Length: 427
Image 1: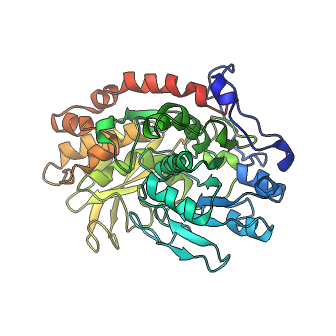
Image 2 (image 1 turned 180 degrees about the vertical axis):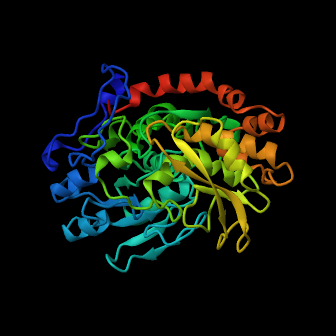
């Protein structure tokens, strides 16, 4: 894809080593074995610019869209490090959960002045492109920096905060810089494609549920395929800059990177949680608890009335990479707060073999069959927003099995894998 190679990238002189994007002539990515020991050579975009004391942003009026995951290897936050280096941003923008990460799901921190740096913080969560553009103009931003670690799921809202921020940059003429980070769940794509009729804040554009792409890769795809339709035929083009992760390989999981895990949201405590989240988050759309209010959200799933039979039945299905343990919890908040819930804990036995979405579909299908009086969907059909259509819900209600449900999206998944190929930066 020649158009990707024409995009501007941060100058090599500003960082510790040259930044190079993989071009379209490279062969398709293959997921070969990855080492079990973490590699110190994995260097996110932020650490590369910090090594040059952020000179790449000298003279720019920079606004930073980030949260607590925007840290260097030594756990210094990038906004603090930029300020200490004398390259002080003119504004910060907080996504869901906030710039400093104090809010629970569906919340944010509002507008305020950061007490450590004195920088004005604008609430970007749920903001439209027009509202964000107004924030850029108020702060005098000419360069927007995005540095947030995601978890590789379409319904994690940070992806769509980035997309909206890109739209606002098109409207204001600002440059947009992605400081890339590894996708903690690896580079494989899984799951159903979003139907545009079901576009919401947990999925604005037709990508699959687990796209297997980093923020930098998604930004390239968004700029070429989706921005023109939403921005009057315009796109960022050469004003989109990506600083790729040095030393990153497509097959890497988070445990391979040697990077510190910082919870990207309050209910994402570990990298193992992230490996399951693209699937088990679907329990948000059911009447069962997805584990919020417990110590292992998205790993502990259950409800009053569920017993040992669920784990026993699931363990007979041979789902790769996982094992289920009968479990009882009392959530402290959210669904069934202060009530005893029977259910399962999903244990990872092989991180490289797990298919989180197939696993969750099997869990849903089995729970519906074993506990028809307990299992149900949220009345608002939130499951449709999460999965990107009504298909999964209607198939499960019709009695479809796991293979039938997963097979229903095989063609669109294959098409997405081919469509994303020109935008992949890591091989």
